[in-house]
Length: 216
Ligand code: DX5
Ligand code: ZN
Image (cartoon, rainbow, N blue to C red; front, side, top):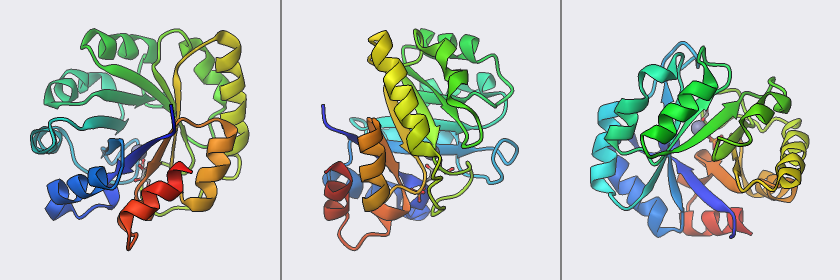
């Protein structure tokens, strides 16, 4: 399987989400990345359940990769699952019993991911090797598109990739933040399977060429 590209609609035109999502998919994006922020866990506010529900209705065949940057994500799992999430990723640091919340996501029939912020060591993820479908290494501080890639990330990705391989795990490694032509190569070489990209894709003059650049 080649690398998966998840287009982050945080950098799309919020008044034209359906148009921009269709453009991203037509350009070769594999997933739609949906960033939910609550103003507590992350210092920004975005969109939530009704917007996801409308987006899923507009693109019923798209894979919605929902990234919950919220405290107490356990309170929202059922709502996001019902609204059309295909993958739900929670944060290790988000005031939750992560193991229990992952079980909850899977019980709803959805894929479950767990994420860490740039300052969190990768070793906190090891207890979830048998349960999580995806591990998201944040390569910027959660909050905003267009930030600079954290140089510590490739080492974390490589360590995680080696550990997963030792375990014979098929779990995916996703990276999110500051992904462009240069950093995409670095994270692919380190072992990333899913690349989230917002400003690089939606800011490109030729989004199709931009997606192709991230894949190769
Ligand atoms: C940041 C979000 C990212 C964001 C990435 O907190 O989780 O998904 O959209 O944006 P870029 O690709 O512009 O760094
Ligand atoms: Zn994200």
